[in-house]
Length: 124
Image (cartoon, rainbow, N blue to C red; front, side):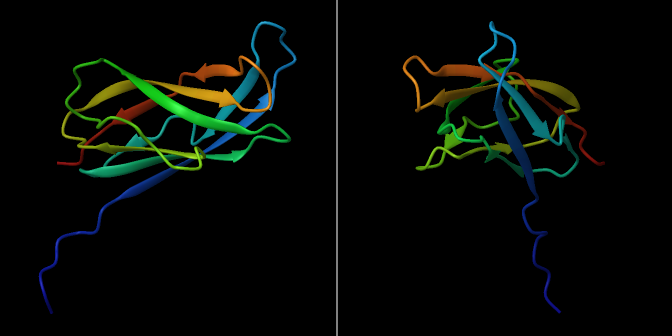
């Protein structure tokens, strides 16, 4: 038996995007889980657009607060735009506020955003 390190932990967050009935908001966005609790160090967090109905919705990037958090890498968007990934060091117990940025390629000026959270809770 060999002593290989533990495999990298992955957390997949499904993103559902639907047109909003609110005239001010363009879309309603729901993430599942709504607020992932990360417990393993060096976890990959992948946001995946799972359902956007008839609209061609893609990720364009993300912002994180606090800016100087020493926990998350810059967001990486897949070539298709349907996935957005962070690597989370998860070395400090803290909440991270994420702003996911989207584009509806089906309409002009189709930019919008959604603000989920991530909770870092490293196991000791």
